[in-house]
Image 1: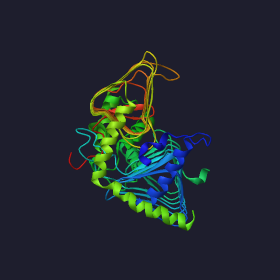
Image 2 (image 1 turned 90 degrees about the horizontal axis):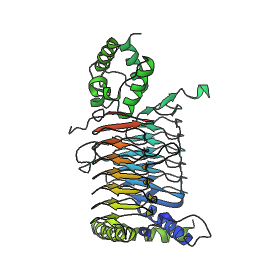
Image 3 (image 1 turned 90 degrees about the vertical axis):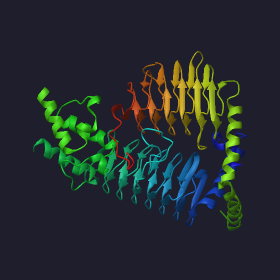
Image 4 (image 1 turned 180 degrees about the vertical axis):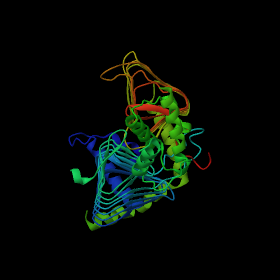
Length: 193
Length: 79
Length: 194
């Protein structure tokens, strides 16, 4: 049962917990088929948590690698997550959609980055009373979202854009541009590379 | 370029807004959110060589081109 | 993956859809509360505490968990570490998402109705300093934020996602950035209901 808290299992093949890893991976295979629309040749590895009841579409040749750390795909009812063809999703990545999150073809989402189209809690008052309005996140094709980066509601990455590690983005990034740092700074695109 | 134009051009380039009136609320129109505000503040501090107190980071001082210009004018008069 | 394996998995997948029905939620909640009683046995724990996913405990000091505190999200464990001689207290109805780390080497005190987003980190000792951390009531610490040693966060405040907080945050404010600066909570995009 995936519910019995598999996630703390190590990946050490000699450990008796390996059985839990296998069970968890197996459950992920099943869950993804139950709850998502899968394209051809999708590589599902390790633990994928797919929750929320919304719509998840995964394109051809996508790789979801949750062997080291689980991947979370959470689309709420009425919400959609679209993952384009050839996308690679590394471990620990979390995507949350109340309305719409799109990840373009051949984009890479590196470890522990997070993409969300809603803050899910109002900033003040009773924070459990309901979510603020959503603002869809559209990540273009051939993008690169860095390790632990955060793409907040309203973030848009044009094709070929690169978000550097740990950057927090809530706005538009032009095609082929590079954005990084805190506060985020737009480095003019590939002309200077 | 005067202060108003400098800031208008920064906002246009950074947040990809083509058209906004001097009195338009950035937050109301969703042009800039909190993270954007931080970028705006960092830009103002660097470009005009001033330091803004955390207490000065309120909509009254930052939430429209008019507000920003008025705030900077007042602040520069004090120094 | 071979075709027959794929077919079997898909068939099992259809059975799994039953879990998404409302009755399933009631059963899951009962499991969460039972699991909390087991994970937190022996500590000073209030009523109605629930643990949805794995909880990693390394408690060699004092731990106090208030009523109806919940640990949600079944992705990566949330970890509570309390060193010898240290104490950690968590106020009523606070909520912890997955992957949160709270580590007390001196004292960490968390108020009521606080929310901790995934991978938030609260640690009262780092390579540079150590000092008690006090978090007021109704504080929202968003995904991935880091609260450093000696920080006091006033009630009602919001720590924006990814921020690194190294200085006190007054009540009813927003802290944002690395290192975080504090700004008015009103500097946010308006909700239609506001």
